[in-house]
Length: 107
Length: 354
Image (cartoon, rainbow over all chains, first blue to last red; front, top):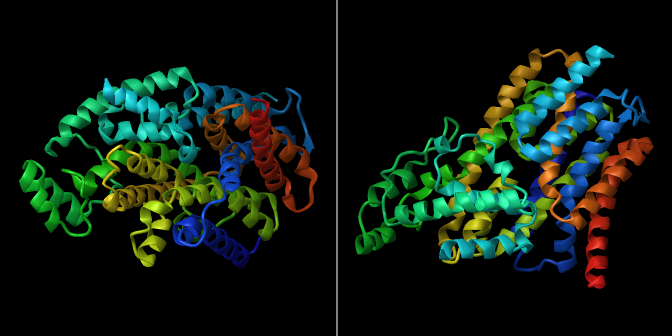
């Protein structure tokens, strides 16, 4: 991706994010929040985070790889257990990365 | 204890405190605890999931102590200087110092003083903006590794240092930054990257709606400025304050919000800079891109609050995975939108069953 494209991309994400932030803070006088929207927005975090995590763990070389030979899946599952119980960013990254390096070295 | 009962009610409140629900409770605790007292900075995340009995119990314990603590402190002292705000924390010239000098004085004197406070000072009894910053301190500790990964992974995806720092400074939303750099590395087209990043940030629309009524007495310019600091942790702190039984000193609440926002912003930029610095020197074959899904994993867990949220996550994850082959890397955004729809549909369905 060219340098200019990355700059434009940054501008796009930044501007869009800002508009989302300002949306109702600015427009409150004119627009009330539709209840259905408010309810639906509650599901943004689990949906987006899962959509980001799962493909990163199970997709390898363009295909879905659910075998124990997939180091990212195995390391990711170990990290998931740690994340669930510890809720600790550093610990989860430590276990996940450490696991991945070990498995990559072993395979 | 009355305080605890009140908190229980607050724990039961759902609507606006959605994502960061339990962080809110922790924020309350954090407001009256010094960072040094928290053995681990990651406690904010430990407490996040409201649904788990263990977390709740822990939250209650912390809250119980801090409430008692807070009551004493509210009587008027900011002498206790246990706050270790950290190097990155801003020191607002006016509000902090000013409020602190007023603090030890009691009752009427204070009230008179309050009218003299500059616009920047907080109406809450003693400690002004500085305590606002202190309230956010444990959250800052959580933000640090996250920000480092954001800076680091941007560098590994081929961003220049200037681009990586601009991304952090302008977007100022970790999850979308990570997704952006990940998709750049995957070679997605810009339009899809923007779409994906903005889908991730849609949750902020909910925060915006939730805080909007509290900012309506302010001018349009102030509101535009405040909107920039709308991030998860800061929202959690602010809404918790506005939801206090005393209204969180409503007219001045935005200074509290601003203090937290500035502290988070500075911490985020510092952590990003460290990540950029490290990222430039780390070879790519260390597979550090894998740290990105690991961070999302930590964010995902507390979001699984009930069955509807789990459904949203399952559908989101599976559709995104199945959509890996979709053109233009549309899989993630398709999965995310499907998951949102599924969670909402499940909620309605479960509601209809009852």
